[in-house]
Length: 146
Image 1: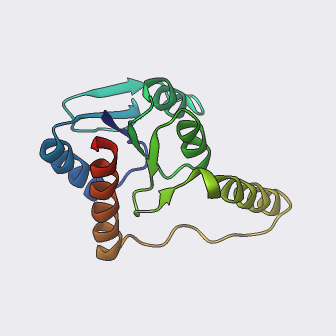
Image 2 (image 1 turned 90 degrees about the vertical axis):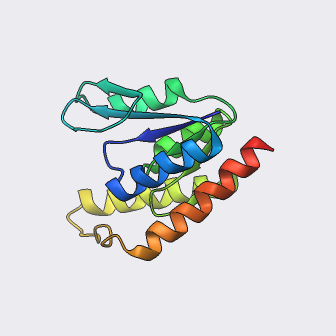
Image 3 (image 1 turned 180 degrees about the vertical axis):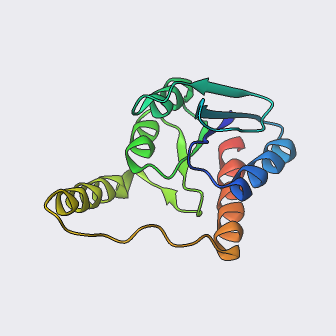
């Protein structure tokens, strides 16, 4: 089992929480990001800056029983299909039962934006996000080790 982080868009707070969790649970921590990002990590995979390159590397590295941290719903769907768990940096646990709904929502919002509509961006990260992320990260790691 390992924690794999889509580090292109994961906040530093979440990276720090993952580092501590990896030590506590004695699991490997792998960060993946394009060469445009400076990530402090013992096991960091650098990829090019082509579209989806980081996501493809995360999918290739993931396996059944791993935990992937990403805010990309499409990437979450792919790793769930491989038997890995997926968690967003805000603490949302992605589940096979609900991922199709999220992907449909993403598609509808993209269609709306392409036709000139506007959608809201992400909310500012809060202390509650860190608390929820840590709680769900530890819960998932415990269940994966059981």
